[in-house]
Length: 379
Image (tube, rainbow, N blue to C red; front, side, top):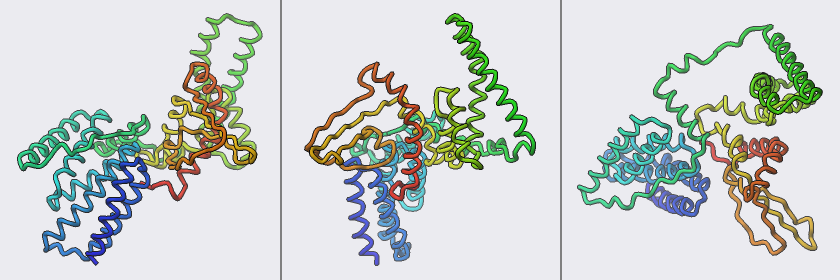
């Protein structure tokens, strides 16, 4: 009944707020979803003719949605935060909820519009935000309780939100999407062209090594001829990621094709880029996170040795737990423990730039595993 629903929602809201303050963001989102589910089931007992019940239902939904907005912003899930902000604004139109929630949501939306470069929308959102603050001040409400917006936003989040905003404001962009393939028989000509590029690239390398040309000519060839060849190899890497008839041969070809670039691109395309195309503009579009975040942020390795039970020892990449959306409780360790920060010195950073391509494929597999994990929230 409605009494049990109120009690359950109150407990869930308190727990979600506590988890948010403790930094357990995914758990806070999970509890918010549980609370919203309870409210959805309890909506059949709410009498819209009774203002008190209608206001309680809207206010309880707004509380949970605001907590979810803050958690998503701290995780960098900008699109999910925007959707929840829209829900809070709809609740405010249906029933006058607490203006603190409205002000906080407008504050978040203003920040997002500034983040993605939508200046006119940012100005309009800011004017609405100031209007709500003035209304709260006139009514005697405290505006100092509004929390500061904390955002864990990466370049991928920025592009994701900007893509969604562009599609929302200009749906005619969808007409530019290619709906049909180039037709049968085109692939063989592209394959011949790419094989010619491979032969030319190898020929240029052999020419440079045999005649021992000067450094200036090497740089010139790299910036002109080599750059054009590398672009062709990118197309080859992309096509290899879609071939599944002979996985063993395909795997060898991917390694050989990626060897001409500075990055195992074919493996990246195969393991992760398809998700980018399938979920463009959504929070599942984590393309840039896995690709660029580890490159620019060298990890910290944690080495743990246990004696005499050596099998309890471990080597852990310690820094990327938040990027992979995995929450782990740290347990005290009584044995030997040592941390190697690969970003502490220029030499270690250079070492990481060499090691990074070697470990990229296992990282893609780990990322793919965590995305499909039942504990990973689906937005």
